[in-house]
Image (cartoon, rainbow over all chains, first blue to last red; front, side):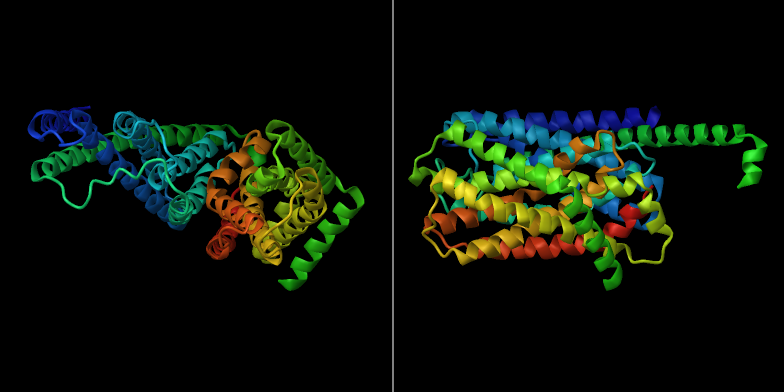
Length: 234
Length: 222
């Protein structure tokens, strides 16, 4: 557990620094006030979730070519952690939207695409959970590829879908510029979140590897128990 | 490849012609959805023109799942897939035959159900009607190509009949938006369906390619 402890301490340090940056160091936003500070958690979570989904896609492709269990364990870990961070985005979003836009939710392009993304990866995890055969990794990797191919289409369709109609609120864009101090707080938090996610993925990966190895050990033991005549008859 | 495709398709069509299982259950299911929607919304002619695109496609999507779920069940029971795996026949021929079969079943459902929707919801299109056929063809293919593929994946899961919609619907969201928007655009005559038809085309090309590239992998996964 030594490595994990060091990793956890680094993460904790970075998150604390990020918290200070977000709550104290960054200036208060002019129109939204202090509620805007949720930005330093909302946006880094989103970027972290997207990074996780990208890694999940890469690991799935690697799995389909190489069929290594490590790639599969990595794909599973990144998908789970990605869904967690994506959930954080979907929870902090409405918390921020309610005081600023006056509503919890709007079917705006970004909100809707993030929700659909979340749905796709939840269905991926469900498929893994429900799969019975020993071929879960293959099926899951295939679905991951389909899900990832779907992302640009989702974004493209919803963008047009939602800009053809008048919207109750105009999106939460902040114009082009951002205060240097705010940018620093954002970046520090992003790094902290990425390290946090990396730690979670790493721990989950180790757990999954252990599970795979236990499974293999069971299989080996069971095959040793098979009576000799069955082995001969093959 | 063409011979295998034709043989498999002919077999499936003949089986369906004799049993009519898939088409009958889809038809009745879609009919129920049409009736229940009508009770829950009770729309006027003007309103129904706006919501019909959504209603029709949701009904067809739900009904299509009924047929898609049955795609591989019969083959699984008689170990056809195992035989197929060891035969030199192209896996894509099998996949395309199944997808085309499902396309024909769902298309038949649409042809039979559309008049009913027109009657139930007092529909009259303001835009060009021939484009609806194009939207229907592209949209149906978008649903069945992924549906057939995912059905082949979900036969390897527990409670497979539940699993198929759970993995099919999220991926199908862009196609569904495009179908509904194009249909609503044509019915109300307010917006051009061109963009949505293009989106459906792109969706069809992307996912048909993905299915053909990956089907062998799924078939061999056992």
